[in-house]
Image 1 (cartoon, rainbow, N blue to C red):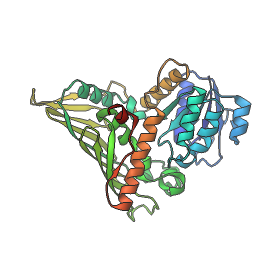
Image 2 (cartoon, rainbow, N blue to C red; image 1 turned 90 degrees about the horizontal axis):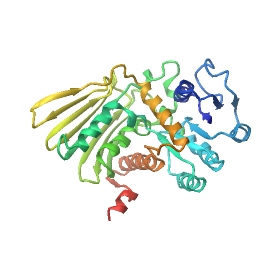
Image 3 (tube, rainbow, N blue to C red; image 1 turned 180 degrees about the horizontal axis):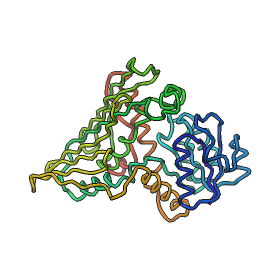
Length: 339
């Protein structure tokens, strides 16, 4: 398997290290030369600066796209046209432009796309999904997510104001950058059909993008959810609460465990994360799955359509805050099938 990695920031380098751990030998790098990280650990891999030359020189089977969000389509479209499988980091883009062409191209070539929402591989969230499906808390009636992390602490080696997360021109802002909950809530609870949001840019971080957001989601089932996102919270806090007619589930990213309260037991049960679990296991499982997708042995668990739906939610949140009212989402294929 010949894999080209485009974008060698922290996440691109993580994918590179994990692919090496998984035994992939034919790895090639497409670099802009703008990384704030040193060349340590990547200088021995073949490198190119031009995408067309890289595709022609190495003829990769797949391209991993981990460059800044606003530049995703500049790589994804030519790579798909060249017949490559695509691993596309989240969010899939900062706008809808080019995504329909990407879908059509992949359909034509028969290649697959996997979107990098790594929380779908989290053992705690898998337990949450299992418990919901088994009716452990009855019918879901409400969901809440709180996720705050102090942006200057993310990459201490660089000026946070120059990072893609902080720059509008690179597709930054807290709603795009921390869009994971929109994906895992759809995965856990069902499709989202309406968004109401307030976005705010405080003076604390000197950014030109929003650094906090309060977002209300209406699910196809009628359930309401609330998502709070910010770049300001210290220490970091990322947690999920799902309330049902017969109980409640709590998941926390800090320890990875799940707490489950049921009306039948009138007590809390704790499901701890697996012994030895660490954050990189999510990314390892993600790359392992992508290799299976490339080999035709597995179907993508987070498809391009999933990634596009999450982007539609993000764009609806931005539009809602700007216009001051709730925004309905386009009819999805799953909803069309139900009518």
